[in-house]
Image 1 (cartoon, helix red, strand yellow):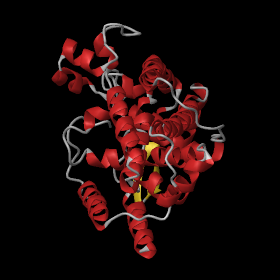
Image 2 (cartoon, helix red, strand yellow):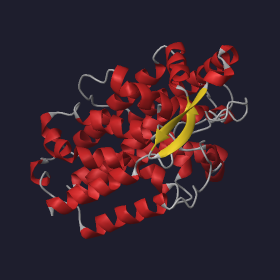
Image 3 (tube, rainbow, N blue to C red):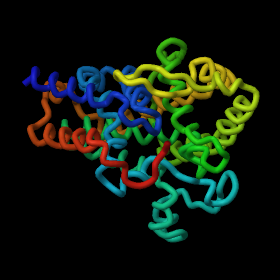
Image 4 (spheres, rainbow, N blue to C red):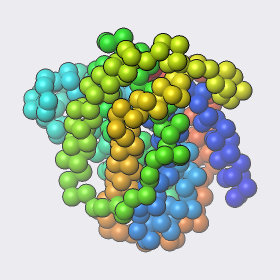
Length: 326
């Protein structure tokens, strides 16, 4: 069975190489979930540390699901600037109040990430209460994705890919290219410990509002850099997965990251802390169940089939359902 699990994870690793890339990018999402594990207390590490490969690889399942489920897309962002001006007092923070004011269809049209995080927290808490190994792992991996997305400035802006300002591609530039080039060489992910979140809803909205405030900076700084950077030095061709691809040049990427004064690193660090803290909060709210007995459990054949179907649909390249991010 262990050999089968390893083979399956290796299969997943192969598939998760960047055939498609959006949101934080597969690399960053996986790193965030990976480092979040080490912020957990020993009582949780006994389950989470042996399952780091799963938690890392499956951090990107929500992105893959965008090729299968129409309702998935809005769970990753919120075009909060569609609701007035910062700090958007006309937008109710509670889901029922927001639905009463704007209607569910309208909310879904502009994104629902802060509300979906609360749904995932509830599901994870219930999974802990019932000591359901598969659901604890699945929901832990996936809530990590949505929490991380809420930390991305362009996930809180209707100009999500610079399409309104002639900056098409900036979405992947900030979220994928910068961390892929610099994270392992320059970013510091040594953090403290996870903390119990007394008010998860308030915590989430605080991070979303931080993202919203930073969105203009993300766009403006790239526009300014582009205006003074040699046009022939902005892009380069690099080999990736055996193919020559055009992407932002290393020099341009480093210059942009420097101009942002470490914003990408800070948001990744905040994401790691937030993910670990939500995991910890769900466990505490569930009554701090003993997880030692779950540490040796395996996924079922049904679980494996579900993972395989998701990967095959994503890898087929049949197209993302809903809004494209790049």
